[in-house]
Amino acid sequence: MRSTTKLFMVFSGMVTGASAQGAYEGSRYQDVWSVVEESPYEVLPQEKVTLKSFYTGLTDNLQKASERTLNTGDDILPPFRKLLHPNGVCMAGTWNITEDTPYSGYFRQGSQGLIILRGSSALTAVKRGEKRSFGIAGKIFPTLDPQGEDPVKTANFFVIDNLGGTYAPSFFDTAMTNDITAVNFGPENLGQTGILAAAVKAFSFAEPMLKKLLTVRQLYPISELGEPSDATVITPQWLKIEGRKGFRSLEEDFRAEVLDTQLNEEIVFDISVASAGLLGLEKPWKKIGFIRIDQAIASDGCDHRLHFAHPKWRNDLKH
Image (cartoon, rainbow, N blue to C red):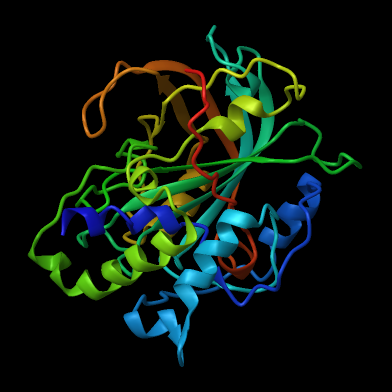
């Protein structure tokens, strides 16, 4: 059961209902964020994840979606449904690396760029008191100009807290990393066995490096961002995103909590990295910067148009 549980957060970009996309040419920040702002919710919906939603007749929607999210770089897609992470909230701000690092691209000291985040909870649970598995998908734009006229290619990353879920009272009180081996599996998870098995099957067909993808999401899109094609690229193995201490909302739904927090206090996430440490164990983290959020929204555009491409596994990375 442990191996199947590892699939919860791998599929944060998994979608259905999107048409085939051409070669990715990049996006303008304002175009992406304007789509995210489409149709803000007056009442937060709660979409349920069921095994039935993975299939249409004999068609395995989950497998088709996993193939698409690994092969489509587009930042925005036609309307779709995220199969394992349907309930989310979007945030926008800046990515800032303030400390000296040995890494390249947007891990390099002084790097700044616009960023769009989508926070989510796996499957159906969204309220405090339920076992929620939090995660963040991030999209870094190599520019600080929100009105820039030229499209830019983005770098996406994915971090989670615990694949089996936790009872953390706040979205901001749990560290999220690209090490996805942590599992807090209990009796309340037993009803999810079919969903997990379907996810394993679908993703194994989409990506032959299944076992490695079950344990970590690589970070090379960030370390390559802004670098020339002949540059020496150095990538950290591990990334941690963690909310700073401060105001904590009493809202039960994590999406309402994020929106309420943005109204009352500036949201800041600390960025930490490491290139040592084993899967599932504590890492020698070094804080290298922060993400500052200045906008937040829960909307149809956030949940059904915004897409985060997943990096394919590579064995040639330098750490």
